[in-house]
Length: 407
Image 1: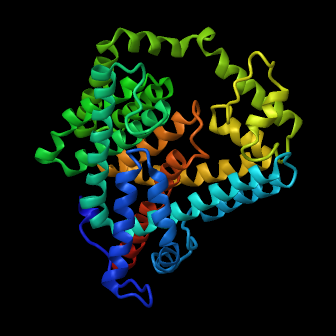
Image 2: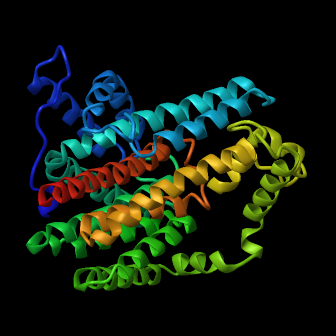
């Protein structure tokens, strides 16, 4: 908790006053924190986008040396990914659609990376107000999903969203993040992990999303691997809740078993094979961002074609859309994010562990999903990456400053 004890001062958003400037940023963070878990991250993204000029000016002063650039540690690999997408657009069959996907990705990335840096700059407000509001929104979303499934009798809950798999993805991300936050707060608040975990696990169960279940299991396992009494307790609690919720409904257990069945996953395997075939035919720059729905039609038999927007795998989606150029840029992005994550992970602080596990989980989820291009999930993914990078830069600069003081 000590790393969050102090807050920054001395921002300079001219011509606005200090108070108005800071409250604009805080309000934007609150809107995103509440809207994202409810499935309306587009609203939070729009509010952040409206404050973009102020965020940009503020981000220039986040690091005294500014060695990482205005957008932080991930600026260069993100720029490379967007550049690969733009180059791929030139050769896409549906150029306007491809350009729209690239511009959407660029707006999400730029806005969320800047917003995350401001969140870390305003970390006391972010941790004491924004994150608790996000967890309250998660509780609402999970509660609505349980009501829909058990009281209304829907086959797969959507809560306030329109898509079951997106609900599962959001519950996993904010559920794991919430576990880390509650462990970070400790004391009586830490005991809220039990009812919070029960609600979230039940909510994930009602979606019957296999990708969500795999991502949840991965995140829980990561918390257990961190070591230490609090993490072991959290792992045991969440693992028991995970198994318990699967046993709660026969349908959930049966569907979970299909994760390991090749026959039950033929549709997804077909999409993966199609993406690899597209990459083979368009190896350098791919077929164009967001083009899988159109291009895949030529690779799949009409009787099996379902019009999927992506191959349900973030790596294969980038490969078929942007080719080797996009894959290299994405790998660079993940390596840098991995470096920052490993640094925060080794610090052993519960919130950092929860953040790292949550970000890792949402990307594991997208190995079987299609959220990268969507504002509901893509915004959360980019903001999570931005938080990891920004907290890493804060801790790194603090360590350098402490070493300089000692000398």
